Amino acid sequence: MTITGIIDNEIEIPEGVTVTKDGDILTVSGPKGHLSREFRYPRVELSVSGNVINIRSEFPRVREKAIVGTFESHIRNMMYGVKHGYTYKMKVVYSHFPMKVTVKDGNVMIDNYMGGKSRRYARIMPGVSVTVKGSDIIVEGIDRELCGQTAANIEKATRRRGFDRRVFQDGIYIVEKGRRVAE
Image (tube, rainbow, N blue to C red):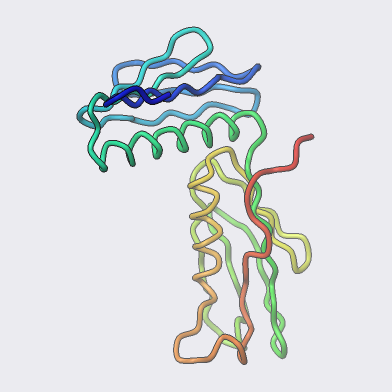
């Protein structure tokens, strides 16, 4: 709701999710786990009362308006993540040399990429699980940013510089991303 010179956005807390605020740190807990994040910016206030989160800024400039929207998006993503989770689906693509993809010790290991002898590694971020089923790789977790970073790490591990991606299509690619389908 906007009153002359004031932005006051309200976010309803869904059923099954609890939100607590300790200083500048907001903690969201739900059936899948809990997430914590620091929300601090001058002239932007965040408060939790009952089952509503208020993000408020008085006489905001353009930057404060943007921060209010960013805070709101982050909080909504956190609430959805602890309730449902996020999934990224990836596909292993090769034409001549079959790749072998395995998960071990917090890394995704890629063998025989383009016939190369050296093994390639992609780091799995904490709190994210990666499963390999044939030529499909599934990245799951409750934190949207960490799931996306893990998928990007895997995709980047098979990036080949100096070659046209339209012709040399070998690699691992994100084919579907976003929110997990409600169970």
